Image (cartoon, rainbow, N blue to C red):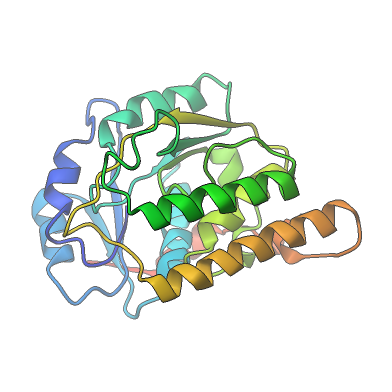
Length: 254
């Protein structure tokens, strides 16, 4: 759980997790100045805290490194803001455990529930436009590139050059395009989403920056695929993979 200012939503989100299926819950707090860490500790969640804010992508890098260090076979990223349905963890993990997929996306677009769940119409519009453009450039047919709800096999996290990715919001998109580049099997499951006052949301300016970052990533992928460009994003250099042994240097136990 990559957390930032999640004190108001963490408990409800954690309670909805299927704990009979989940072996361990890890939370990395990105230097929040609220009570996120205190709530996590009260709930008994294994909690780590960045001493300084590292960004959404930087938070995920720590999350995955810690999960690998713990020996996880399947890792599900769940935002603690309770926008996504935690009960779907069972189905998402099963899709990976069955060895049918390496990556599973909780799609807000499949099932046509995004608008009904409160997604702003401008976000829905740009989600569809960006996803369509990315599908063209990447040669894929995904319903959504922008969901923050994902499940991964251990091999995916050990193989992708995640250390080359941005520490900002475009990390999610880069990771998914990397999975395509490395021929990982990607599946999707319909996931209802909830937009409400306490749920996290990036502002319009950062959404625009994210949009350009998404398009640039897809373009770099296409040029790399055509062998016209080299990029660390798609490198097989082991030095660009996450190192579980480095996890303790990225976050401190809270």
